[in-house]
Length: 241
Ligand SMILES: [Zn+2]
Image 1 (cartoon, rainbow, N blue to C red):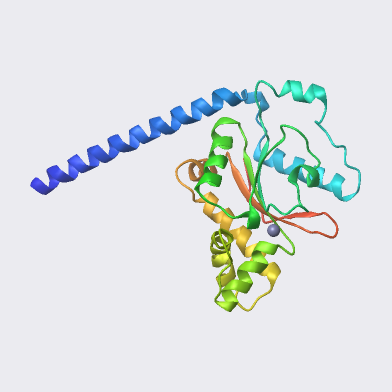
Image 2 (cartoon, helix red, strand yellow; image 1 turned 135 degrees about the vertical axis):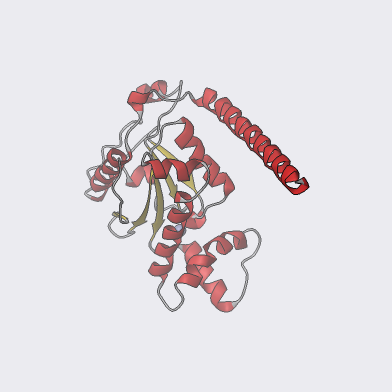
C-alpha cells in the first residue's frame, strides 16, 4: 500500500511536471510564433506538394533554367509580418550546396538549418519542431552530399583512432554511428548512412515529430546532392497524406 501510494504520488508529480513542461514549451513557442506570425491554413503546403516543389526547383537548377524566385523588394515586404516556409532543410554547411540555390527558391520559402555533416543535436531538432509547430512546414529534408569533408574526417579519425582538434570532434562523434555502420564500405555509403540515421532519429523524435509523422501530416526524407550535375536524389518516400 505504501509502495502504491508513493508510486501514485510519483506518477502524479511526474504528470504535473510534464504538464508544466508542456505549458512552458507552448508558451515559449507562442512567444517565438508571435514574432514570426503563424500562417493560416491556406498557406500550409502538404508534404507531398512540398516534395514535388523541391524536385521541380532542383530540376530547373540542374538544367540551368533557374528562375531565382522571391528575391524582390515586394517579396521582402510580404514577409515582414511572418513566414510560412513550405519545407525544412537540414543540410551540410558545405558552401557548394546552398539549399535556396539548388532548389531554386527565395526568401521565405525554406526553413534552412545548416551544420557540417548535416548532424543533429537538440538545438537543431528544436528548430525543426518550431517550424513544424508554428510555421506550418510539413516536409523535413536531411540533405547530405558527395565528398563531404565532415564525413571523410569522421571516417579517417575512427580508422586512425585519433581525434580532431577543438569542437570539430563533436561533429565527428555525431557521424561516428554512420562510420561504424559502414565499415569496409566507401565514403558514399557512410554519407548516405549518416543521412539515413538522421532521418530515422527525426521520425522517432518525441514528442512533436514522432506524433506528426505517425499522423501522416509531416514527412521526413533523406536526400543526396551530386556535386557534378547539381542533382538532388531523394531517398525512398513513404506514402504521405
Ligand atoms: Zn559536407
